[in-house]
Amino acid sequence: MWWGVAAALLANVLYSAGFVLEKRALAALPEVSVRRPARLLRLVLGSWLWIGGSLALASGFGAQLVVYRTLPIAAAQGIFVSGLVILVLLSSVLLGEETSGRERYALGAILVALLMVVLSLKEGSDPVSRSAPAPLILLVCVPSLALGVGLYGAAERRARHRHRMPTTGVEYGVAVGLLYGVSSLAIKGVSSHLTTSGFGSAVLGLLRSPYPYLLLFTGVFGLVMSQAALQRCRASLIVPVCTTVTCLFTAVLGTVAFGEALPEDPLRLTLRTGGTALAVSVLLVMPKHDAAPEPSAQAEPPPQSPQPPTPSRELPSHEPGRPAAEDTGVPAGQGAAASPRKGDGEHRGN
Image (cartoon, rainbow, N blue to C red; front, side, top):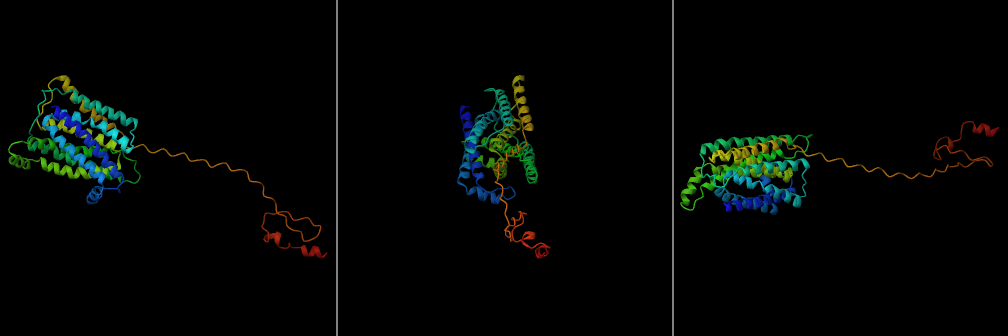
């Protein structure tokens, strides 16, 4: 059992580091879109930083296989949620992201909710299931995949509106979390087929099950959807939302699908169901939009120093002893000051 706990903590570090590295790599790339998956893959595969992040995520996948062979589904999700703390710290240090006060309260409530789920566990009383009926797995997973893809498509359509508020990425996180929840159930199913004896028969049995095909679907679509979402939204918010949805989905539906019964003790049952309800309610009230940046105060123009009065121009007199003409404000050579006035000649002739 302790091997499972250590593997879960290692998976937390690998997943958090992988998401942060991918987010940092995506920040330096042109905008990617799910509508152009070939271009997206070409761009990310050209970034060594992104490749390093994807290798960290793949290693976390391997650690998760060990977890599901040694721990019940609900217990594993309770440990996985501790990765939120690592994710927030790495996002703050490496990405410079800051969470708002409301989001910190929401993340704290999520941790409390999942702590309630962990406290509902009791060593030795929660058996680790090894199999689940394939029709039941498909009944749980196929509608969830359709819901996740549809929710992501709706968020994409709203994001293309011109006069929209900047989204925080909650919708993206819920959509990707549903896909990763299905992937988590598929990993649980794959781990049940890993045996030390009869390797050939184990591979044949795995190929006859729905698990590798669910993994293929969630791997391709989850990769494309998560990269576009990570580029547009803060990792310190979208990844915790995604992780919460994944953990709740796996803990609740995985427990039902794999036949890992809920606790019979009233206190433990209340903790498990109450923690699930609290986490879902927190997701519903989390802010859907980033706060608009405050307009920067415009610097007032510096006070202008008073200009000295312009000296008046004096027009030269044409007759000795005659005072100079007053300045009319008309440039020299133009207007009445430059042309002889009517009647001047008559006056002079008199």
